[in-house]
Length: 112
Image (spheres, rainbow, N blue to C red):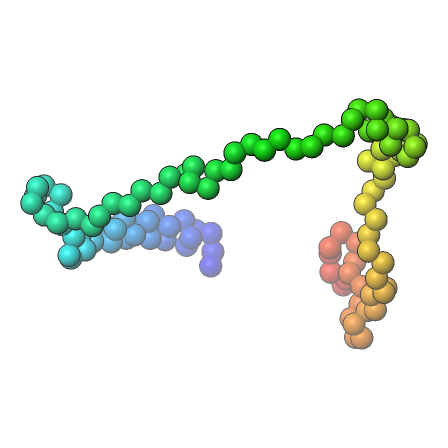
């Protein structure tokens, strides 16, 4: 499809879609909102706080034992080294090329 054809059809398709959306009638079986005596489905309220869990105090180790653990591991430098290292990729078998295919050319271009 050429660009000029696309430019001509786009406004026509948008106009047709808007016309169809406006031409729809209200679904049958709905109550008239202006009729005070009309029956309506019962409203049900679900509180967003119904599954709220209160804060629970968690046991905290003493600061001396926490400091001793960090010192035993090697101090803050060990944590900094772990954060700087890239995540280790899981070891897997090397991928074998599919027979009859050639490797892709650099830059995603096809070979000529």
